[in-house]
Image (cartoon, rainbow, N blue to C red; front, side, top):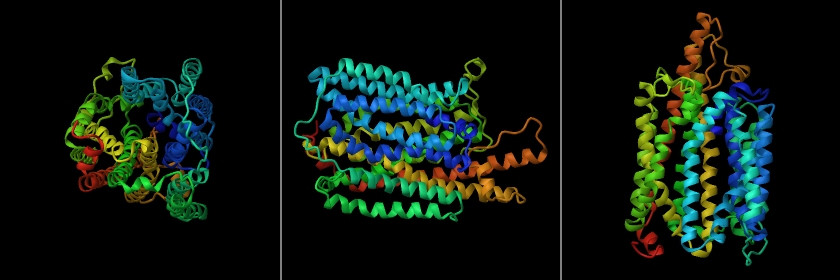
Length: 501
């Protein structure tokens, strides 16, 4: 929902400090930075203090921070509240499956996992469309405020029906320092890069933050080997499949998250899709994930995961290359509930977006379950929880870092292209706050020829910048495919998994 709300947030929420795309980047990345940095620590807190208790605390925190996001009066405060929301979310992610595992057993546990997976798939498919419809008809604030009644219901259900469980062998020793350093590393590198690029690398604050992030990044492996109870146990990386899977996860999932929100911004902010249409446009891709993931998971168990972990991202890379040819003149889909004539997508969607989305969904469904198989069979059973948490965190860490890289490419391409098309436009810092990539200005009521020419130049420059971003993302997906093809050992996964199944 937040992804489809970002264009409206950029247009309607005032900011005296950040450019539009810059602010949108922080809204997305701020949540992921704290979520990824605290995931492993949150899993340990769940095991020691009680999964029911920590899940309820996370729900209350998510409720409060969602409310704050929904009423935020400025872009700056929304970014702060999103960072806090990520911390609350970190308590929820490891808790849900842990609660089901502790509560159910046997056939009932299988049904519970099935309901959990079905609910996750349903929100993945319907969330963007429902969110887009609410954003179009009400406000972008609904994307956050809708969490409030859901969290109230979830808190009641947790306290009323879930029994407490904990790991009695948990030591109670937590690597708070490690979690803090990881947050500084990821946040410093991503924020410092985006902030500096927006200001043409002239602001000392951005450089200082970037250097701080770099120093923290260098410190992370030293903490891993010197701390008594490190946040990320280095012994896990003795497994070749675990190491390779996490490297490819960083590349593939980092690109995956970034593609999702840059594509949504482009469709709405540049092409002119309504928010509901942007959400609805990706439903076919999500259906592949629902209906084919379990099948490819079974095939990976029988033949080994390497083929699927390589072929899936390769198909995704080809799909993103298809996105890289979407023209600036493609017809927007103006879906609106009150107008039945808009229900069927235009030719532009059927030609420029749908083929890529279908191939992308097929590739994603081919990769997800086999990657999980390779991961969970690469570590001993007693390390399964922390191994999964580390991989989950890495999947989120990639987004802010890769997003910062692509932000640099997009802004550099956009402002150079805009300057070439409108030579008399002085691209100074004030211009960068007013005119932003992928967020084309709306024409005034009575536009002059100069207004129309400038807006057309913005649209063309944004499209060129988006194409460059997709080329980079396609390269990252291809790198992930090659990493899996070369690095994954089927024999190790099948042996750890107990044979061919």
